Amino acid sequence: MSVTSAARGCAACFSLLVLGACLSPAAAQYNAEIARWNAQDALDPVSDNGLVFVGSSSIRRWEQLTHDFADYNVVQRGIGGALFDDVVAQVNDLVLDYSPRGVVVWAGTNDLASGSNGAEVAADYQNFVSAVHNSLPNTHIFYLGVMPTPGRQGNRPQEDIANSTIAAAAAGDSRLHYIDLPAAFETLNPYGGAGFTSKFVDSIHLNRDGYDFWTTIIRPQIEAAFAPDKPLAVNPNSLAIGESLLMDFGPTDSSNGLPTASPDSRGNHWNNWTSRASGGLTVNAGEHIGGLVTTSGDATEIGLVLTAGFQLNGFNHGGLLNPDENLLGDFADHNATGDFFFSTADGLQGGGDDDTGGGFMLTGLNPDYLYEFEFFGSRNTSEQRITEYRVHGANESVIQLATSGNNIGADGMYDGNDDQTAVLVDVQPDEFGQVFVDLTLIQGQFAYINAMQVTATGSVVPEPSAAAALLGLLGGASRRSRR
Image 1 (cartoon, helix red, strand yellow):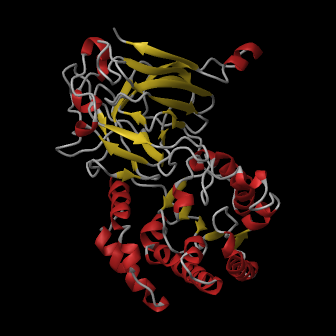
Image 2: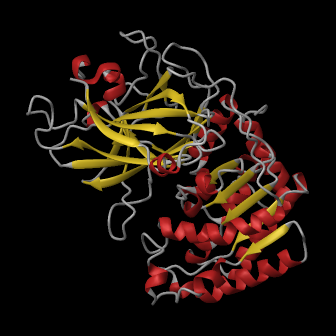
Image 3: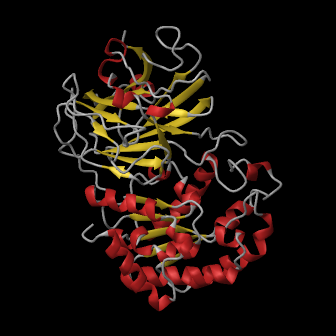
C-alpha cells in the first residue's frame, strides 16, 4: 500500500461524509485488527482484482474459504461482531484498497440481533454499495441474504424486510447480486429439523458442513459473474529439491515469546510470525507474511496466510524452554519451542469454542514437487491434549500428536511433549502451489503448533499407475522421535 493507515482513515471519513457516516465508536475497537492487516499488506502486497469476502464473524470463521475458492485470489476480511455501518465506515481498508473485481458481503445479522430493523439494514446496504461503486464502479457486489440460525428465530420478520428490499435493489443493477441463503436454509426445516441444526456449531455460527452448504450456493453465482482467474504459473523462487524452511509460531514480546535468531546455533535461518504479535493476542484469518526464507537464508516468494484464527502465548504459559537438540534436532531452539499458536476448535456442537479455528495456507510452492511437513507442538500441563494436523493440496494427509499430558516427556516426568514431532510425507500442493493446514482439537482444551519445517523432497512421478494414484490420495504420516 502506498499510503499510511492514518491517511486511509481520513480518506474513508472524507469519502463517507456524503453518506452521513464516519468511523463510529463501535468500529474503533477494530482498529488494531485492521492496523495489522494494513502493516502486513505493506510488507507483503495483496493482488488487486481479486475477490474480497467482508463482514462479521461468519466470514472470519470460514476456515476453508481460501480452499473453497482456491482458483480465485481471495482476500478474507471478517471482523467478529461487526455491524453493517462498521463495515461501511472501514470500507477503504476492508475493500477499496484491494481494488477487487468482486466483493462478497455478510453483514446485517448482528444489526438485527441488536435491535435494528430491516429497513435500517437495507439502508446500510445502500450506503455500502455507494461507497464501493463511487470508487470502483465496475466491481460486482454479492450480498449474502440474512438467513435463519438456531439462536435468532425471533428476527425473521425483520430479516425478511431487509432481504426483500436488498433483493429488489440488486434486481435492477447487473453489478449487484442477491444470494438467497434464506431460501436454501428454508429447505432444511429451520429450528426444528436435524438437517438444519446439523449445519451449525453453535446457535449462530456454521460448522464445516454448513460452510460446505454455503459454498454450493455462493460459488455458482460468483462463477456466473466472472470465471476463476488465478494464474497457474509456477513460482520461480520457491524451494528447490532438498531445501527446507523453518517457521516459528508465537508472539514477539519480552515476556511470552521472542523471534528465533538467524542463523541459530546449528546455522539454520528461521521465519518468525510478525513483530506486532504479542502474548494473549488473537490473530485472525487473512493475516499473512511473505518472502519466507530457506534454512540457508535464501529469500523465496513463498507466503503464509492464516485461514482461521489462533491465540498466542508461550514462555509464561507452559512453553518448552529447555529443548534438547538430541531429542528435537533442528527444532531445539527455546525461542521456537517456548511459544506457540493455539486453537480451541473441535468442530463439534457443544464442544470446544470454535471462534479460533486454527488454520493456515502456504502459497508459492511448486505443484510438481512433493513435500514433507513436520510439526512440533507442546505445552507443559498434565491434562492430556492431542492435536490433529490435516494437510491438503492435491492430496490429503492427517496425523495426530500428543502435545501435553502427565509425564509424557522423554524423562517420564515432564508434562509436555519434548521429543515427538508429527511428520507428513509426499504432500503435493494443488495446481496453484497451495497447501492448506488445519489444526483440530482432538482431546483436552487446546490444540498447538510451536514450530514447523517444510522440505521439498522430490518431483511428482508423472502418469502414475492406477494403484499408485489411489495410494496417492493420502500422503504418508508418522510421528518422529529424534532420539
